[in-house]
Length: 333
Image 1 (cartoon, rainbow, N blue to C red):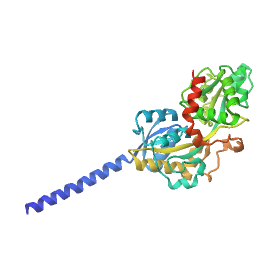
Image 2: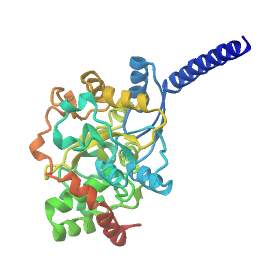
Image 3: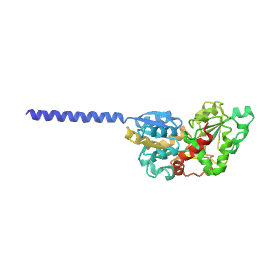
Image 4: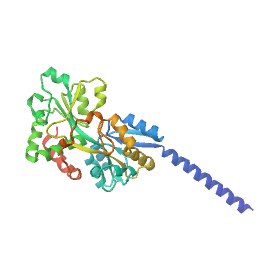
């Protein structure tokens, strides 16, 4: 009889333990830690939380910083999800074994050239580089609005151009790699020699140049996309797409290897790639959606994709270290 009571109590304890563990896991899976390089992050993640009930804690960090920190931590995940940034860093992170493979059911709607063939990252939007121009500064200094990359090398822009550092910023790396590819090594380096003379210092993140242009610290900021918030705040900013070629890349989403909140991480990837998620993203940050069944936002209706500079993203990711090291040797300030 005592043995029977013992086993009954043991079974009850085990059932209670399982119930508690299940509740604890459920609670953990109702939150998510994200590292993001995307505009309007608060609005985007608030919308995701409203749709799913999953709370998001996020940190803003450029893709180069993420990659460097992950490598220094020897693969220990900094968060659950990596949201946006330069695809070159995602390619390098996959090669280093820092990402978790996940093929979302929504990935079938994303063209193959915008996603990793093995499912380690998937593009959520296409980032296009433009000139964020402070029209008030240009008017004051009597400088014409630049229309091409070659315009930016004019001596009248000395000290007036803001660009981020290619060794840190995915935006700057793709500006560098795209123009070297389009112009050829010799003419490309000659272009950056001239451009460098007009750049007083290199910013750390791709988000800084448009902000510096907005407040008048620069006449022109080389920007990843259209910073809608700056115009909404009343800054005299005009966005110009260069006539002689537009650098661009897919901004991916990926799950970090050994992510703590794996189910919530997959939920964010699914949401960002869904038709509803893509429609919402473009209202907050005007970019070309990665999905082929979601049209671009009104602000980009006049942009011709034929002006996009052709680029092999996989090759760009493989050559990142070599190209960045060469740039640092020559232009680092």
